[in-house]
Image (spheres, rainbow, N blue to C red):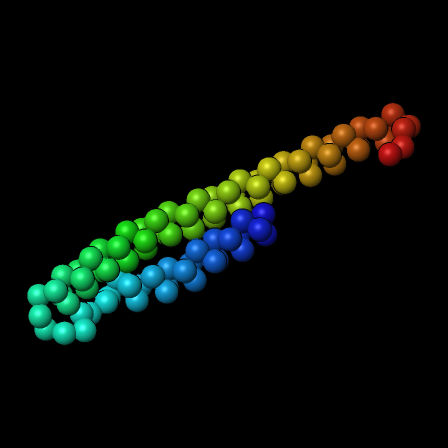
Length: 90
């Protein structure tokens, strides 16, 4: 679970850096500079969207693992109690 959250945090940090690409300005006023900057901004926006999706996926997986772990612990407690009630040991 922690690994999923760590990976999600890395994707969030990458989004901060990708934001710079999405805000790129051309070095000059000529058409070529602005055209290149438009392409870079477009790529930056696509990268931001992808990184955001990856972060959401990782957070979702972390929640699923947390839920599964809670269910597993509950079932284990129930079975441990049942075994002890019958005189068994673990």
